[in-house]
Length: 310
Image 1: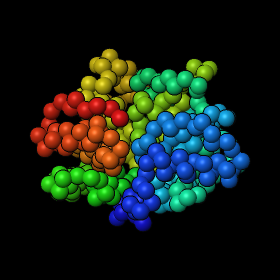
Image 2 (image 1 turned 30 degrees about the horizontal axis):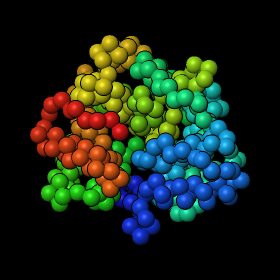
Image 3 (image 1 turned 60 degrees about the vertical axis):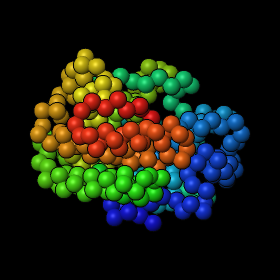
C-alpha cells in the first residue's frame, strides 16, 4: 500500500505496529534465515527504520516498516554498490550476498559496523562529502527515482495519534507547501542527492575517515535539497554555530540561504520533521509532548525552534 506520493503507508494496526518488540521478532526471523545470531542485538534507533547492532558479528541490520519500501531499498542497495565501486566513502553492505531480504512483511538489509564507538563527523566533512557526491555521475545501469519531498507525509499524518484539529492543520500545511514547492526555481543543476544530508549521517571510521550513511533516500533532484538541513539547523534551530556554517560554505561552495527558495525548502523540511516524529507518538510520552510542541510552533509561524533532536 502506498501514498499518492509513492511512499509506503503505515502498517495495519493488527500487526502490532512498528515497535521495539515487533522489529525484534523480525530481526530474529531474518537472522535465522541468514545464518546469523540475533542474540544480544542492541536496538540503536527506532525511526524510519529499526536499526539493530548485532553482538555476534560487526554488522548492523536495518529493518524497514513494510514491503512497500522494497523499491526504495533496492535502489539503496544499488547505490551502495555504485559508491563502493567508485571508492566514495560511504557505509558498505555486508553479510548476506543477496540483499535486500523480505521477511515478516518487512524489508531488511545488513551493513558493516562503521565503528565500535559512534563518532559523528563534522559539518565541514559533510560539506566535502556532498560536493564530491554531487559531482559524481551515476552509471547508466543505475536509474535513480525522482526526488519526492512529500513522499510518506500523508501516511504519517493520517496514521499518527493526533488531536483531529492538529491533523487537519498539518494536512492544510501540506497542501500549501506542495503548491509553494511546485513554483520553485532551482539554481543548482539537478543530479544525485542523498536526501537526508545532515551531520548525523556522517560517521567516522576507526581509521578516521568520515563516511556517509543512511543511503535509503537517494534520488535524482535539486542539489539544494541536500544543503537545506545544515542551513536550517544553524539558522532556525541553533544546532550548528556560525563558525560551523562558515566551514560548511567553504567546503561546499554555495550558500543555500542566499537563494530565494530557501524558506520554502526549510518549511517543507520542518513539516517532514513533525510528520516523521508523529508516527512514533505511541512509543513514549516524551515523543508525544515534542510533537505537540512542534505543531504549536508551526502554528505560531516563523521564529526560532527549540526542538529536541530525535
